[in-house]
Amino acid sequence: MKNYLLAATSLLGYLLCGLVLLGVNIPILHPDTVLNAVFKQRFELIFIDISAVYLVQSYFALLVVGAFTRGGFGTYCAQVLYQWDVLIASICHGTKNRSISGLVGERALSGSLRWLAAEAVIDFIFMWDESHCKRTFYWERRMGFVA
Image 1 (cartoon, one colour):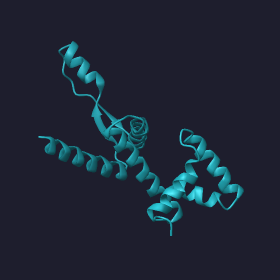
Image 2 (spheres, one colour; image 1 turned 135 degrees about the vertical axis):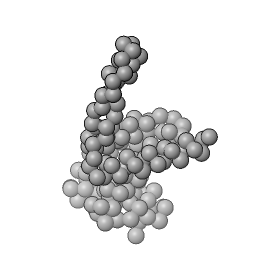
Image 3 (cartoon, one colour; image 1 turned 180 degrees about the vertical axis):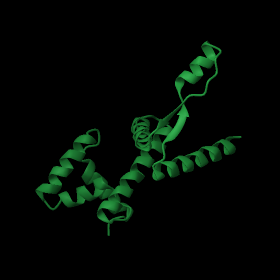
């Protein structure tokens, strides 16, 4: 049963990703539909459209909150956020397997004010992780991601 559930959630994820990339609004049941059916014994289908942008924003909000939880869900959320980070770094900087933090940490070592400022902002965002950018750069170098 667990395998069927995992397969169904994966397929639903593929479908939602496709709809979001196409920019299609997602129709969902309005909460009043359920409330009317339960409390007023009146069943009337009412749908509302959720925009693709709102869906993506909600997804990232869930990932950020989920990344601070313990267990498998927290690990999953942190890993997905990291992969988005790597994707964005690849698109913006043409890198492979490098994160934005790792790139900024590497370039801040040059002493350039631009990269030192970017490093300060990122390190502030990740204030619980001391010297986040430099530590990420050194980790990426140890992993063989730095050319």
